[in-house]
Length: 339
Image (cartoon, rainbow, N blue to C red; front, side, top):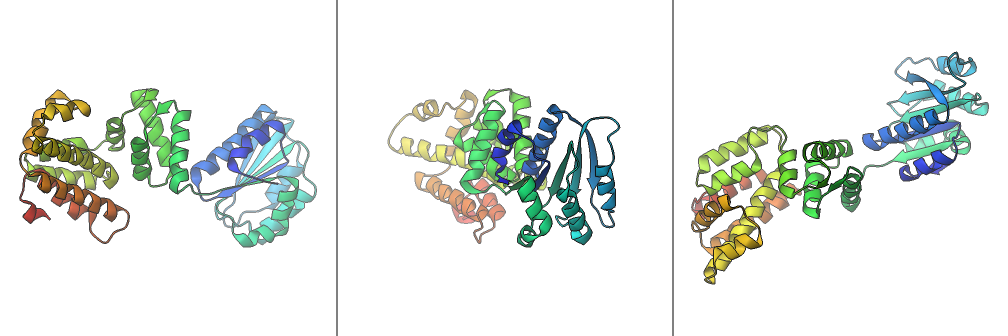
């Protein structure tokens, strides 16, 4: 019987099959599926567990011998077989077929494989597992499903994240669910349960960097272009993801465009600052920076943000060179020199 990963827990609560095959190339889902089988089996009295790691030269007779022997410590037991290559080979296929022809009583066989090739689905041992037990295949989570997965995972951790914060985490972890899970746990430990702002998410994913993306942007806003570029180089060397840096830059560029638009119409900057709940200590910094360029020039820098975003998504331009130009522009350099 084939099951989707999300249906495994409810199945396990109803009944335990004699054999489970978990396979796929998404590590976190594979790990959690195996944990579910072990934990629920343990609750059902399968308290003894023996682990086999199949490497080159592995003797499959040891598995068969273990299956036919009596348990010394428990009435029920789990025999877990990990096959990192995803291929049991000729001897392994024969041993699994023999096992499945007459499964030992009170013994649960848990097979954990990497990605299963299509040809293996037609083998005798796979068909026997599909008939007598349960097959769960996990797949990488991508696109919209990835953000939905992240949102659900955050809710399970007691965290409330808006769409921008979720996008930031998705981009930072690049589809690695294990890394995403670790980032969410870090947020929960640092900030506790409840709502976590985008700024806190951006700071958290910057890790233990010498500088934060926000410090880099504020340095550029203060007109210290050389130091801001140095900070960018350090953040890059420390592995801070470009989407995190771009989010911090884009946030203030959009605010500066709005300030310049408001100023051109004769409005008060406090109107914009209050609308965006800008901290008092940053208002003077942003107001001074805004006067370095015209509205058209700030709009030009905003278009540079779009070019960086396109480069991140695979465009031909160099995202780091464009970001250096953007920082220089924020610092007040002539746009002819940075475009």
